[in-house]
Amino acid sequence: MSDQISNYPGTSLSESQIQDGEVLSFIDKMQADFAWDTGQAISSYLDGFKQGYITGAYCSHCRKTVVPPRSVCEWCFHEMDHYLPLADTGTVNTFSLCYVTWDVQRIKEPEIPAVIEIDGASPLHGIMHKLGEIEPANVTIGMRVQAVWKPPELREGSITDILYFKPLEE
Amino acid sequence: MRKVAVVGAGMTKFVRRALETGKELAWQASSMALDSCELTMDDIEAVCLGTAPDAFDGVHMNGEYLSDGAGAFRKPYMRSYVGGGTGVFAPIQGWYHVASGMFDLVLVVAEEKMSSYYPHAQGAFLTIFDHTTERPLKPNLLWIFALEMNRYMQTYGISKEDIARVAVKNKRNAADHPSALLGDADITIEDVLNSEVLAWPVNRLDVSPVSDGAVALVLASEHVAKRLTDKPVWIEGVGWNLDTAYWTNRDLAYPRYVEYAARMAYDMAGIKEPRKQIHIVEPYDPFDYKELHHLEGLQLADRGQAPQLVADGVTSRDGDMPVCPSGGLLGVGNPIAAAGLMKVAELFWQLRGEAGKRQVPGTPKRGLAQAWGDLMQVGTVVILGR
Image (cartoon, rainbow over the protein chains, first blue to last red):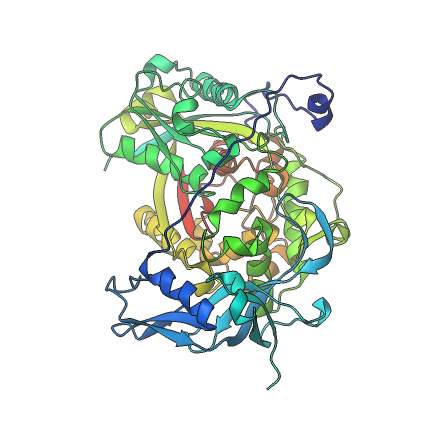
């Protein structure tokens, strides 16, 4: 703020002023349902989950294997050559121990989101998922992990067909 | 291209929840900016508006909704949107409106009202994740910051304490800002480290607060600026850049898109040695580690070395390279688009020597403001000089 200006507009309210009706507000809910088409590349990704593998896409021009698969290579803007199954193992690139939900409710046992570099994909190419079957204190960057799948009859072609990744004993 | 100057600025208080609507906040900041350079809306030829996702407001075409408060009635009007980078992109859009020769006087307004979304503004961010491949995992926004912060710490061996120093510096700086939401002259590193863990390694005081507020600037072409003021502040360089939207496919320890945006702005401004030629920096600091991350991307610190600059006092308000003398998003508040434009306004006031208690010593000649957003992949940079 400039020292040339002495009056600063803006009136601060507290939550209780709204809850107690001291300040009027209008509360409404919006309904928003969608059915997203998955397209060619992500269809192959989801189909792979049903079969029990993680699908990548390969660009022969850039010699890169990316995951999730996509139909266009960002680097050369050519069509990706083909989709291929990758391993369901990988390396933890980074992780967090998360004690809050999306609406900032507290949870006791942390969720462990992570970026996992998938074996067979180019370096630093990973996906976001969660870790399980491990004490939060024992998670480290660089640890080797493997996907834990739903039983085949329960898979529905979704990222959640992988329940989580667990430490890999090699 | 024509030279473009900033000739006026205005700003509301940043508060957790404002009584005023978004339109009202936009009008307050706009009229302050016009008053500061003794213009009226009749003098303004076009309006550029920045506001972040429509989801916060639950209003489709939020630009049109805010248009009366922003003074857009019967004028050429555009809203730009690049997520968290919007607040520094809006003045870039204003810059090319004027630099192109189309207009001589342009009003740039950035507004954000995040408090309307219930129960918490964080919910409005859920849609930034890919609907098919990520959202079924029920992610929350903190995840991506926590994941990036952890990767940054691990890559360079940076401690939580190194990072907490940024929050302490900025919240202390904000104690001198009359619009600030979270200024605290007495905060300590222990306060930050002992605050509640939200998503390790992110604690509550590592994060900027959800806020409402608005900021506005008046931009003028050279011949008009010289008639309006004897202290014009020139836009010397602008840059913007976008990295891949596949955020799990990139190096999370280094923001290359910020580097590219900065290099574009440095080239335009003729800056060869940014560490010597930039005297004040206002990098985007929604989280404390982001200030460090961005200083490295801006080439103002070596990779992994920004924490050392903070520890050595280089980035303090009276240091060799003051960083966030305003108090930043961590201290002043984070009404997203308004927070970015606040950084440009801070440079304007600092370079004119009007920043009062926040004034950095040594009559600085040039400053850089930067913002960052979308799914952690857009960098926007503005360089101001006098």
